[in-house]
Length: 238
Length: 238
Image 1 (tube, each protein chain N blue to C red):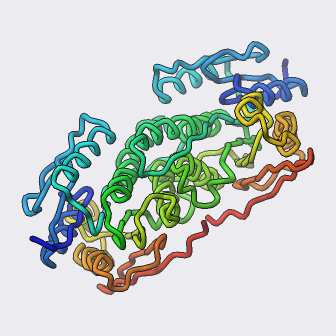
Image 2 (image 1 turned 180 degrees about the vertical axis):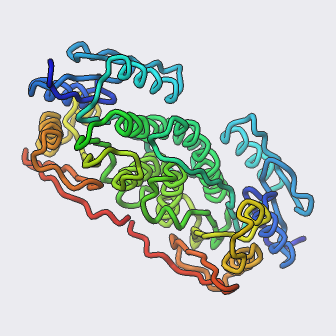
Image 3 (image 1 turned 180 degrees about the horizontal axis):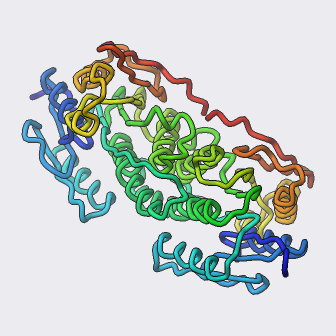
């Protein structure tokens, strides 16, 4: 493994995370998966505890990387969740807390790890949301936490944000991923319009290896139609 | 008080909140102040507990307004706080939790109250940040939570967001307010370039009474130079 490149996948045991880690591993990278359960195919795992805070969990990751003297070439955060509902509903306070933890805190954790462990020229990938480029009145907790991620993405472009020299941050905005969960919950959907996980995984490993990497701060919308996937660089207003 | 208009001020015992509540009261409005301590000049107070969650605290406000059969003409949220630091720092996790509570949760609380208790044609005012219109690499916790508020502001324009008919939401973006706290912490500042609290308070009561109210969803930047305050309607990209 001497000289091999290292990637850390936050939420690396989920459906997209597993596909991303596998794809990097297939290309010869050393994989570090961070999740609430182990990814058995990963070279290294840090298993988080749901009863501990993000701060406590990230401390375990930092300790592990320091102990193993790991320097990372890429950090990919594919953690996140979706929730519907307007701010008028009584459930809003539980909802925003959940979305804050799932979406925002995981992205902050990944950004904290990237700013401390990425090598010069490395890549940080965050997961935003196409929906949050516009108002999200009926999925407000989801929308405001994804808007926070878009702001984080834009804020890490400047070197004072903490990323090392020549490193880049890119936000991916998948519209609908072809996961088992989505096939179960939307069994009537047209799967030809959903993005295969390998398409996203290949895109990310390509960027990490320097192929077609977008400028730092870009948000990349990922839309599939009739089995064809298009990547659109979204104008960022900040 | 029969027929009088009602305003609820979230953080109504702070420096700006006290000025806002006083100004509304001077104009004959009934004031409801929500804060961690009582505003002695307010007609009604709901005192929050710092040891309880936003959800529990808001439940007290909802109970009080229902019990008193209050319908509100305006809800003003001036809660919030500032914090510096990049995502690289070890203190980031405590920092984002604090900013999430101070900035985002208070705005969500005010929006929840507004969507449930505002009358038709009423006004909700949220407090955003001029700085968060651009990347905020060195005050990241502050920036991402204020970006979340800007997204909330944009999302409440559509009726499906929960505001009643003809109600409006407006975000204020003060740059530097002339408060006692700021005079103490920035004693060398040029106070002539700071916005007097009464200027902000008069602006808000004017909008609440229908004078020069901006279109729903507008963010209004408030900048003072040489004792002259300018209000700029910021183009919102969403």
